[in-house]
Image (cartoon, rainbow, N blue to C red; front, side):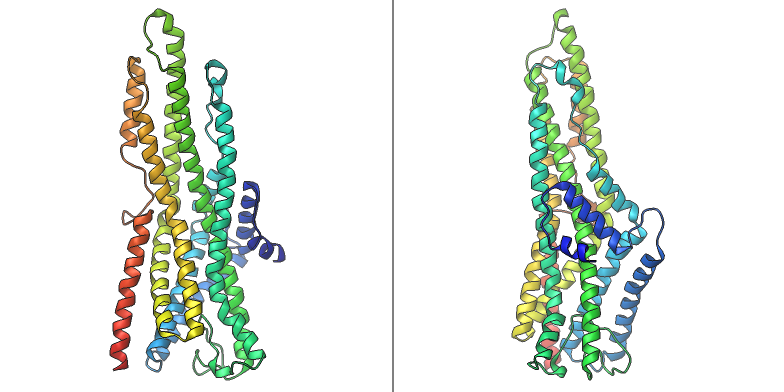
Length: 421
């Protein structure tokens, strides 16, 4: 437990350290088990599902008694518990998706080592330096992802942590205390009202553990997704370097019997480049399989949570404005990092298409031009990460989610004014 928490707040410096941390998070959560589910993992998953049904029960039972702000807080709590179940279900029921992306991260890159000795101008050393550079950038970006998500969950922890401290210092009375989630325990008439200090302390402790556990799940899933996309981006950029290498060595015309040896070498190289191209698109297919469900629930959670955060920021007191203002900023930053991955994939795919168009194809053999046509035809349709043909992972998707959140916020605002009248 101690090592996991230290790793969660520690900055990694190498890609191996990031991978080790991800493995540590997944192992600690117990829900992720590619071979067979563990009893403890099943118990934890059952607990997350139970919290949803309990929250639903409390909402139905106390809805008539609550004022409008309490109802919004209850729905926000319900949205959070649904988000946790989505995360847990991802790892519990579909561990093969995470395992597939993890294996893709650990796999090496297509470097075309076979022909290094046979070409006059080799860019093999440049490729190796490029991989080292991109891996360092991936580590920095993975740290940014982690700390953005930690900032998001720290905003949830402010209420139980500072509430406990302020109550122990006798600054805030018991009846003014609140928690981010509604959970019922025996001998309480209303989940928003505390009559005994032990009720608040016990629930605050449970919610701190629950939120930290959710943070571990989220960091593990997001970092796996981020590194998987980075792996494909690096592969695409290596492919562009390979095309550059081929153009440098075979820029001139190939004709006559004296070029037979070079023509045979070009045939081997273009065949290998074609396999590299297939390798890239196979990885993109894996990305789509891994992101399909995740993009759906991330969109749903971000939209509703941002809506509730904006509403509570406007309606709440100063402490609520601080908390929900920080929460809104953290959600936007974490979402931007997540959606930017898909945008980068589209941008690099367009560069790949341009690199194929710029190939030296004039006075080349028929087999070369035939392969080039196939590669260009397949690349003409820009690769994207799509969820159920509804959502696409890019910047435009973030704009749509924010616009939807603002629309729901306006609806809540009008409903609140009608209720006040």
